[in-house]
Image (tube, rainbow, N blue to C red; front, side, top):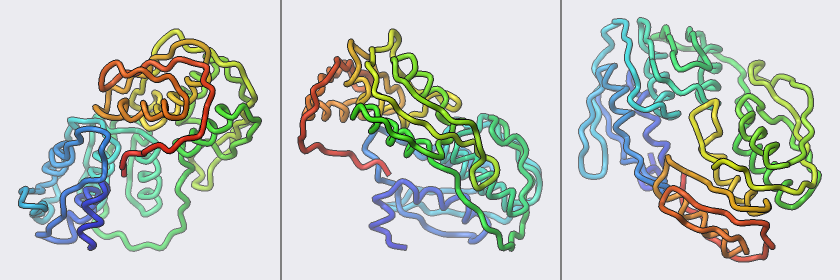
Amino acid sequence: MDVEAARRTRSVIMLLGPLLDESAEYRLPYAGGCDLGTRTVQPHMQALRQFGLSVEAKSGFYAVQAPPSDGNDRTFVLSERGDTVTENAIMAAAHRPGTTVIRNASPNYMVQDLCFYLQRLGVEIDGVGTTTLKITGRPSIDVDIEYFPSEDPIEAMSLITAGIVTHSEVTIRRVPIEFMEIELATLAQMGQALEISGEYFARNGRTRLVDVTTKPSELRAPEDKIHPMPFPGLNIDNLPFFAVIAGNAHGQTMIHDWVYENRAIYLTELNKLGAQVQLLDPHRIYVNGPTKWRAAEVGCPPAL
């Protein structure tokens, strides 16, 4: 493992669950790669302790001990309904004999995609798309399959935003509508004209897709603040796009990012592009529009 590269990403923490039954002892470098706010790994540890995992923080790395599986059934509640926390717990349960019930699980798009993939591998998972998952693990997984990860709602929202801000008619195909419904409803409330096609399935056979066409529109600031919520609410990673979109709207829009301590601060970079963003506190901004955009050099925080 390239330790220095691993320390620059948050995803290294995702190896804890899959390695649970692969090695009795191992070390992992500290997770990094995100400057959006304080992001503790304790929810991951709390979840994986249910499987007997023991983790000790050393200088620059985690020392991990993973005892052999006892084969017992287990039920536990996640202290945080996090996407990666849920995925780590799912991957740990998938390889362990017995039945695991995970409550307060995230039902977000990447979690569902992982469940669909594991089901193709023969792992029994009930409750996909809900906050309670029941997983019957397979100690031995050795099958060849072909699988296609579903389309990304964050990528789709970025393209929709580009169409809106440039007053363009743009068609974005293969939009995962189940994970975009609140975003599209919010846009409609702001006066954005959209054409949405009929639904069809992604190549994984499970995710519902549509094509979305943006139309040049006169936007108005919503009466209520725009804020994220766990799925099926507005996706936390789609929230920054609404700061840009609000720059095109007539009136004042409040953006409330209650999740991260620093991300609202970074949105003031839009002022370099001509926006009128007022920082109220580390979690809230006002965006006053409409904006006459101009070119400029802006910085982007690391958030892997």
